Length: 289
Image (cartoon, rainbow, N blue to C red; front, side, top):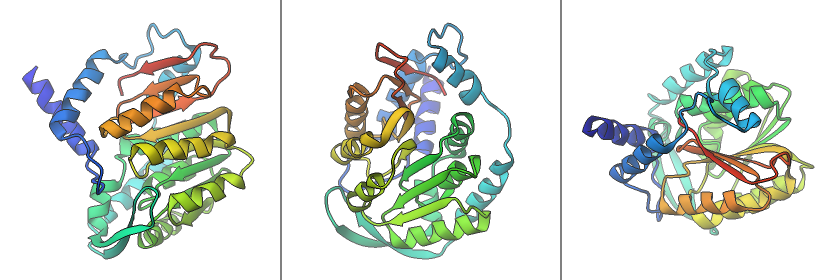
């Protein structure tokens, strides 16, 4: 058990390493405890005994899909270049409900190490797009563009609108999209408080949303509420780092309990919510991944 717990602490420390000023995240030890509880209590991810046909399909055709898609290697090659890129950027640090709070200088490699989602989750997002074929995708938090690339490459005909607060980081993301030859991405710069309402107002509907920004309770719930009018029955919302801190766990609970949400899936590092009307009774699943 001690060995298992040690592995849990190491795993969560590797998966969640970003630090946000003014936001108290769980320590690796606290995260390890939570991950161990999740691992023990979660469904085993095989789909056996799953009574929801939709969730069974999600497990067998998305979570367990071990195909190596053509895009994976190109995107991961680019990630490796970013991990050794010592170019220094001056970054505006946006906080919830405020303008620029401070600036700092960071190397691209440091941003890549701390902010990019591991390939396991980028490739999961790719498979979600491949399986459910969304036409309009919105991402809050472009960072260096690796996750955006997974979303965009999975369906060339889709429109991907990605929002990034830091101008210098957005410039690197644009460069990366060009390197990969991705032309279906619109990158919107600026504080989410300003840019998200404008993006939502011009879209008749949003099929898939990935929220990976701010990591605080109030803005996370506010972003969800702002997105909700554009979500429809078959939309999917993916929320990053749902167990990253007490605030994010509170945000996850509030979002799951919203009357519009009929189904949720907790994968520990990310959470998914669905609005499918076929689910007459709200259902919440925790699945090992």
